[in-house]
Length: 456
Image 1 (cartoon, rainbow, N blue to C red):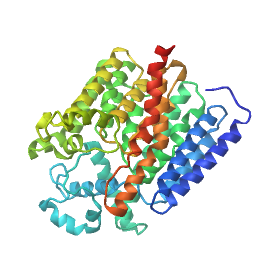
Image 2: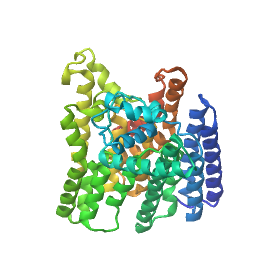
Image 3: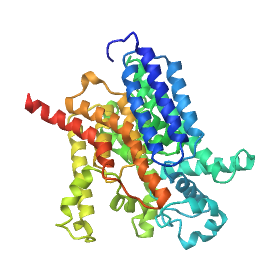
Image 4: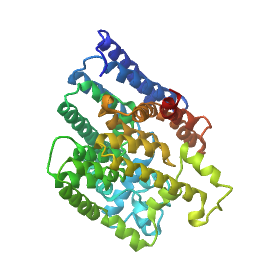
């Protein structure tokens, strides 16, 4: 934390007021370029609030008030940042109908009667030719939310698809609150000021994508934080929690080697692998029975959006490798190179015995910069680890990555310009400036950190 500034509280309040105003403008504006512009403005104001709060005292009441205001604004808007919420609800209804969404895509003839019964919901599902990709614990959460939606629908408070919106948002909001409380516990245990919580509590992107759009990534983040936290708990329980996080979203599986160093290594790893195997079994068995890779294979091999480093790696391969030739295909070869590089980074961090929170920041950052697919809510994975930074312990490259990820969190809503055009014209087209704007600042900071020691 920097030196205290006597005008810090006033500057923090001003930065938050600008943040909240721009956020309201962004979610309330009609469709068009104004929405992404306003949300990027809110992100830049969030950066200012983080810097100001770092140099001023901040009470839990003030922090919580800022948290609640942002979530309240997000709650009362349409889930406009993606159509994923409808996919969650549909897959839950498929399970409840006794069918398996890992084997049957929404457009499958076997689901025709369900599609007719839930016509309004089915019509909202995007990419209806692709079966389920989300891991089993996420599916369990969707089913729980769908059951709650039926209760809400029967109560007449909300009806139709809006009941799914409310129930899935409640799930995301509950996990969002859990993340805040887990982070607070971590911060208090390390005797750090509550201002460190601002990157999560006041992030407009986090509020919009979780409490607003209902993305379930926040559930995986909450489970991972519960497993990695510094307050000692039974090793088997921590291993089970991290396995559940990995069976919600795959990324937390990479945190296991670091979490195991917190004590009870053998019990932790045994619980992790046993619970992960049991949790993953429904998806593995369904895919083996169907004889295809399912939605997860489609996502891993085909999906691509707003990447920068991946395209720089992939495009030189186009003249060299034939299209559609298995692993000789340029897309798949580039993906294989990315996976090998990311696993190499993971191995280096394990050898260096990095603390879990430091390793998580670096691994999430590498995923965001290398992934062939980037959506704004992916950037929210960096937010909890930004809260847990200990600047005095960081390496120069690590510090540059953290600052670059904070900029990515602020600038990621620029990608909504693509979504706005797709909704207006039915065309998914990324302007040439988009990826450099979102990822360029982070890459520049990393290059500066790499080259500066050589220059001096």
